Image 1 (cartoon, helix red, strand yellow):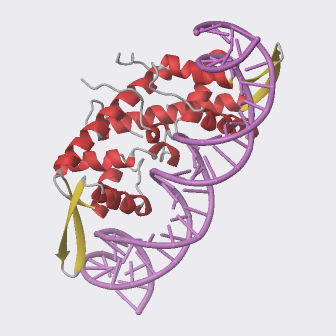
Image 2 (image 1 turned 90 degrees about the vertical axis):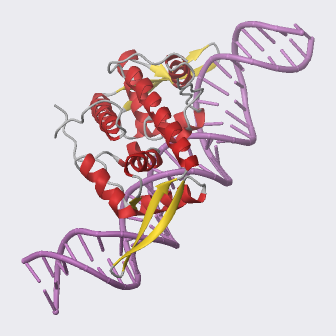
Length: 119
Length: 119
DNA sequence: ATTTAATACATAAGAATATTAGGTATAGTC
DNA sequence: GACTATACCTAATATTCTTATGTATTAAAT
């Protein structure tokens, strides 16, 4: 039985945008810190997004038009909520489909269980 | 239905070593160019390993003791065969298990189908 | 016969994306 | 009053890829 505390960093590379976009599909709006905690909870600590990775990613997604932001104050503390744009919904769907397809291919390549889809 | 020519490069990041190690599990020995072709064939061109990525990876795996090499001449053309060491077999198993676990987690995170394993 | 494509190795400059470390500040808990 | 959690951010560094380039042999096409 394979036990894993946390995935090696290389694996997570390239999936961060997809994770963020997909979370926002289900949650309408979220702020950065909330995203890190949600991912940590949902994955039993196996995926821990660092803030140094998350914030630049959020800013990039906003810049390219996939997310919009709203600032809100909780007392004196600021929160920056992110929300999917219409374009962002498309991007999210593309990314999720691609990742799902990729994982199917990888499972085939590693003899894990499935047949790959035929294009 | 989702159609995909080739995966975006970010996705493949972090899985190259695992792919190489796993191929060598099934093939005993392979040379670099052969690996690129095998992966291309097995994935219907969806994963195309570039030589600029592969050769440094092979050199790194050799340096860290997971692979050994034998040179062979086909006419005047050289081929460098790679083979798993005992250590490489362990590394391979760890990597494959980790990737399988990671993909399970990702499928859960993206609401695709499965429940994640419980550590 | 000569050009092109395939085989086969390799390195180097640059881009993308993460880690690590650091910074600021508020709010709650011991 | 100190520590932890919340909440944002950036910069230096590391890793790992792409793209471009280089060398050379062999096979196929024109």
